[in-house]
Length: 113
Image (cartoon, rainbow, N blue to C red; front, top):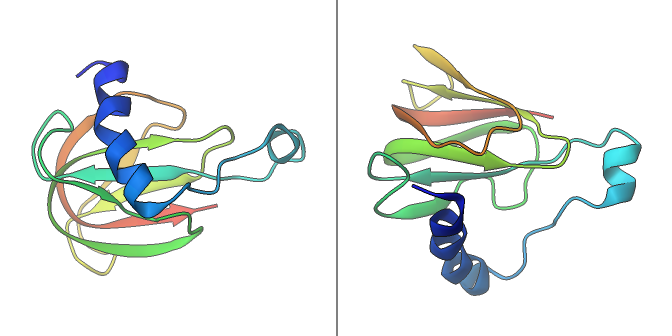
């Protein structure tokens, strides 16, 4: 999936949820970490979309039926997916500052900001 397709898929969600708290240049300069993390029910960031952290910061976020994930951020948080719904079990780390969709089934996401 190309980046333009991802943004096209995210736009209706962003409009429905309201504007997420976007990182500012000032936040990036002072080291504030922020990520927007999106989960998908299908591989290659297709299917049903969910804004996992919805503007929130560090924490364990439970999800249902997710098969792929992508994150965006100026100074991104560390993001990892977990097989258990409590951020335990098998772990896979999402590459920081990557705009590539990661195909991995998961039940929870850990953000460390």
